[in-house]
Length: 286
Length: 292
Image (tube, rainbow over all chains, first blue to last red; front, side):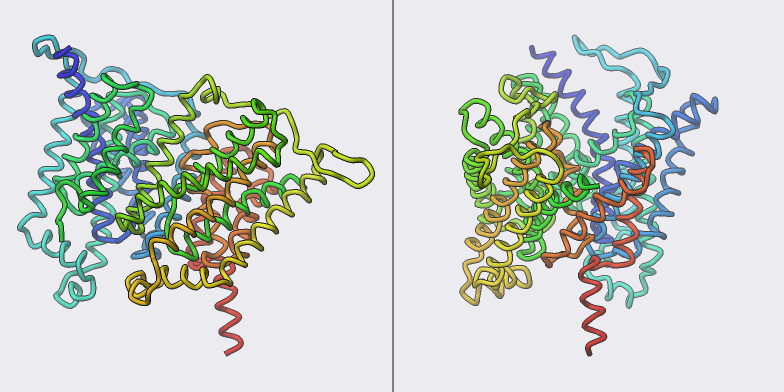
């Protein structure tokens, strides 16, 4: 029993780190542009399919394919920002609507080309580590480590640097930040590029673990949003912790309670947290 | 051709009632499809098991919708959840409801859904009770339902309540200092919107002859939001226009399913970029500029 729980906690943490990388993108975009990019899940899906195309069809080794896949997602994000999101800045619902449109377009385009049949990649890194009774596939551990490092690096890059302070200033008062010499247009573009690139990276890592379907983004963007709120919107490390906590709650919840309701356990905790601590677990109370 | 109008009218009811909560009172609810789907199930199950006539069965369904709206609304409004946070919490409740319906196999038949074989009946002079069959009869039935919904909403909005809703939307704190019971009027708006939406659920199930948990999905929520934003939030005609555009256009142009979904997305994006206030909102602003 104990090893079952321990195993589920670890599994939940690994899945949760995937939620975390999307949550980081959501927190960054919402904080800087005031848009909830509901289409982030689609950029993740693009990253996943791009990895598949590059690695299985193009013959690139997987670790090499991950980078261009994330770049492809970021490029798609750049185009969407320049063409669409630029016009909905600061307008939550119109931004949401553009995201809904993008989801429809991307998902059906991939559906058209690859069909709805789930696709699986070859094992990238077979084998597992054993920890007492718990066995952990090496690839899952690697993915977890990569995501934790990426989020920590993002945090380090923004905490205490000029760029980080500029972003916070812009999020608080865009006009004042502009007057203080923050190049806002560049900042927003950078955030869109980075968040969609992160989602693409998340998708590329996802592709090595699970089978791909055109609709995979929908689930992850919801979980990412839950994780971002759980950790506290605007908190970078909070998005990682929020994701991990969400993943663990779902995994452990489905040992003791019916598995069919696993999505509900995270939601129930989320609602409770929002009611009693609206800023999230790691968010700024003010 | 008539089918497009019937679907337009049915989703129009959803969109108009959603706009009462969102466009007029300013609360971005994601609970709408949950009520829509739930009442489709409740109505059908009552007809099936309790042998109630269709019209009588819609009433307990509406009562259930109101009860749920009061529970969910009280929780959200008591804690003063706003915009995005209100959306997420209502979404969470809607998802929980969907999971219950998906997993309660003995009653709802899970993901497979239920087949609805009956049709609602109506009393007709001379012939007595007749079942409503065929597109023409459904066309008039749904048109009447939409008309009734719009009328009720218009009455509500023209009353003191409507002004309270507007005050809450524009500035909640100011409304409170003016002596408006913000909690109560938010709840009233939420309950009325959900109650009216529940009738759309019952009708929809009986029109298509099929109910499944997809009725409660998040996509459905997004679709209703899209209709309202496209047509123009804060108007009563806007949601109907939006529901017509999004229902009719992809069907009029003959394409395969994937291309149709791409077209749907493209329509959404371009309309909202060209007309950020929706079709009706933009027309209205244009007319006002010409008059000035």
